[in-house]
Length: 331
Image (cartoon, rainbow, N blue to C red; front, side):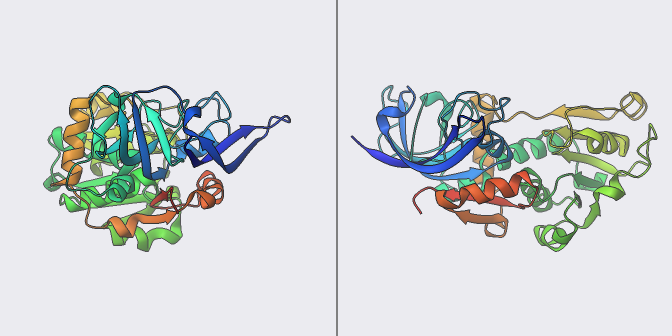
């Protein structure tokens, strides 16, 4: 019987949640027709919520989080993949209520996996992960709705986070002037190293938030935090601009009038990477491995093993991480 290392979150008798790296058996994995030997995962805010027992993310414990995984096929019962194929898994139920990528093996339905494009290594795929894929969907939505670099600046909120930092880099490489908004004033140099032309603070962004409309500033917005920041972004978007929305760390509520939509023709587009259909999923991964491949992957990345995850989970919950944290499950 094959054993492997995994981060296991358990619900203690006093209703607190504990995390530890344990040995598990492959027989303990959930049902599925695709068995993968994981090489890398990545740490996302949703993983930290799962690892803390948040019932909105994971309901059944003990549980292994990790909404991302990249690795090698061990076996596939339906012949979708062959032994030795390198695959990427992001989204669906991985790491939520299905044992996730913070382990050396996962077993899933084969329809959740994507064949790794030739232009990416397994490690590079996890530098992107769900965060990079979400950023890619956001940038794609802006470009496909006819916003071009000549139209003006693009605002990215939550810019030091996983989605935000990849979005800053993607947009810069596409020729846009990027304004990065962050609550981490100390990370301005980091954001400029990714290509941001300007960095603004949260306080600056929230000025005059009582007004229903603000000065037109941005041709497009990638919002990763929601709440009053999303509202301010919408109010500040210029005529015909596009705002994408993919996060709610600030709030799930949106308090904004209809004025920006009916007086300036602003479009608000929701971004979902979890249930993204396979055809557009494959097309975007090909883009991220090809024309949109990031030049600054190493600058975005901190690499840790399973044993260091507990500390990093605490850090991301406190808002103390920036860029992308990838997990080498074999360290």
